[in-house]
Length: 141
Image 1 (cartoon, rainbow, N blue to C red):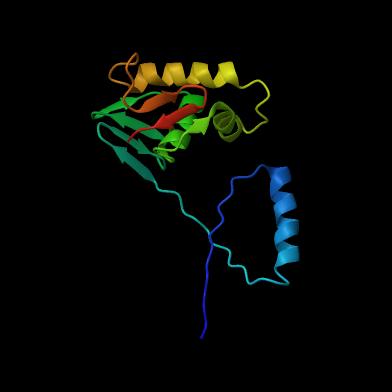
Image 2: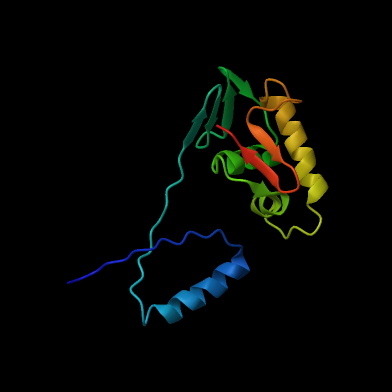
């Protein structure tokens, strides 16, 4: 009888972490069969009233194009690519700014505020980007 158990590990790493993981994987490959899988990102993220066309770097809300800054766009894509998942300010900062999150709190908060003004029907009562008090933000699609 052959029993096969598969596990998928998906990581987002900075350059230094990636080098460390490569060394670990190389060491493990002598003992465990590992399969490398390339994940192709979804080119269009669609939600009621909101569409993010990643291959065109465009955001469409109810048929109207919304102009976003680089940080606003990257933050929106990061949140919308993880719908329903609560992401901390530090996670958002590290993913979007590509640096450590020592002083990220006001930066992320400012971008979220500006993003809500641009994409939310009512920025004071957001539909898409919800605040999870004491934790961070989550995207509701």
